[in-house]
Image 1 (tube, one colour):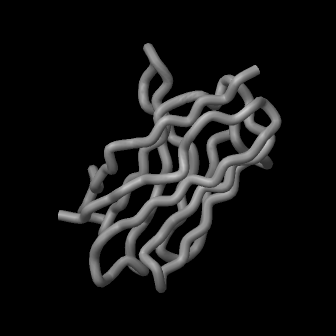
Image 2 (cartoon, one colour):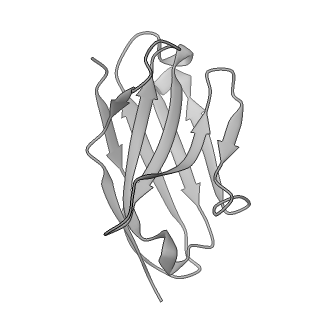
Length: 118
């Protein structure tokens, strides 16, 4: 079981920036597909961004051009740089680690709160 731990959340004003970090355990981190998801109160969890083992990235339309996902395989870390934050970005953010194609569900962290004030 991969352990996933998020950090870096908090309160920020609209237009500001935050960087979320995600640490994942395991000796083959460079082979993991990593993703960020978020869940706002009363809403379903939604996809935010992903970075595959190859380095390919994908983003939800709502965050394209504002958020950047990156990884540091030497440190077993994934980052989500969030710029030009909006109140609608307020949510609990979760990191997900998939070890390979058979690991459909992946391993989830406990999540971290991001609050954007208007």
